[in-house]
Length: 253
Image (tube, rainbow, N blue to C red; front, side):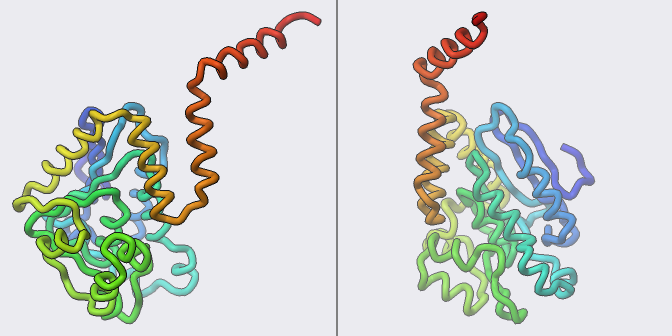
């Protein structure tokens, strides 16, 4: 783990820890930070990794988008879905991603947590989608991830009012999976990640693929195609037939 980068990465056996590292700005998401997260989540999955824990430095998860930068963005930036593209990448990451939330997860920070498979919150955690107070709407997934996670009524409440939700309410409405004492979110998330790591690797990845497809309304045909191919790639019949083909191809005619 290096100390000055915008995103820190650490390997703990089969678990990777990714830390948003902009504590002076409460880990607000500016373009440089988003690009670094794209780099981390956009490459090949490290061999042997079974889960990823995503957290923030300095006592906060992410206090939203950098408003000074956001104010300068226009139509082209919105259409480019700068943050949304990153969060889709995290949502579709091949192995489970667990958010460990201390302090603020506001605006884009809340949407970042929503893109993860699971969310562990400490008692200090506060969640909100305050965009309407700035004259905009959540633009990186909250408008569709929140309803499917907590229900349409609760999602409308949070989006229309922009109010902050404490950890205990977040647990009650289903926004987070667990609440732990202050300072324990990372440790609790690592415990979950290690439990996941003890399960069948292929089974977990296929389960994430199927559950994600259902949540997003993805065409199941493409998902079944990939699952079927994955199963057949491991079959004895496939290996025998391809070996026979290669043997025949290598014989002189």
